[in-house]
Every structure is written in structure tokens, then in C-alpha cells.
Length: 98
Image (cartoon, rainbow, N blue to C red; front, side, top):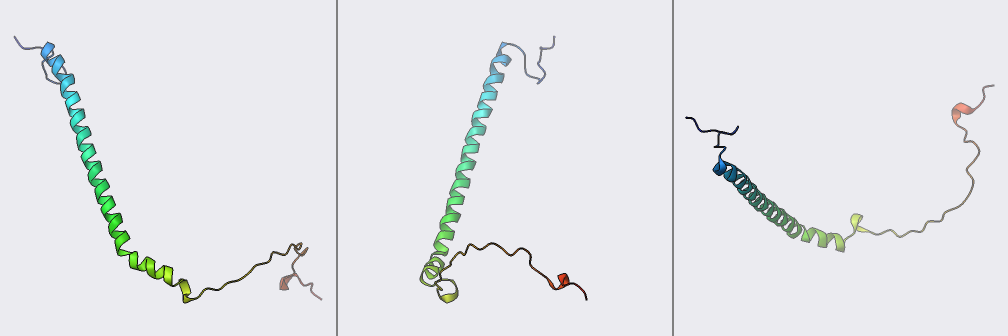
């Protein structure tokens, strides 16, 4: 006599019905553990790259603080004048022909 099997080929008896959810839960736990390890590795690599870039650009940031762009600072003042715009601006093409 052949044993009764489920669709996955495992025995459909009481032992198979107990082991299937247990194996599924074990696979979920192992998958979660691997995802945590991968997340930790990505976080550490990202932090290392950020610290490396910060360290390599410290002299550039210091130089930018000491010397502004263009080598000089131009101070100025702006005044807003509230005038209505002209009714119509004439162009060379708007001049009537004689």
C-alpha cells in the first residue's frame, strides 16, 4: 500500500501536518535573520562611505569658508520701485509705414 501524500509530496499524516508549519516558520525566521544581516552590512558600508567623503572633503570645505567664490565679496543694496508698467512697448516692427 502506498502512503497518502499531499500536493508537496510530504506525508499528509499527523507528523507531516505538524512538520510543514514548523518548517515554514523556521524558513521565515532564517529569512528574517539574513535580511537583518544584509541591512546591517548595507548600513555599515553606507556609513563608511559617508565618513570617507566627509574626511576627504574637509580641506575643501575649510578653503571655501576662508575664501568666498570669485575671490571677492560684492555688497550691494536693492530698492524696489512701484511703478505701473508702460501700456505698450513699441518694437521696430510696430512702426507704421509711410
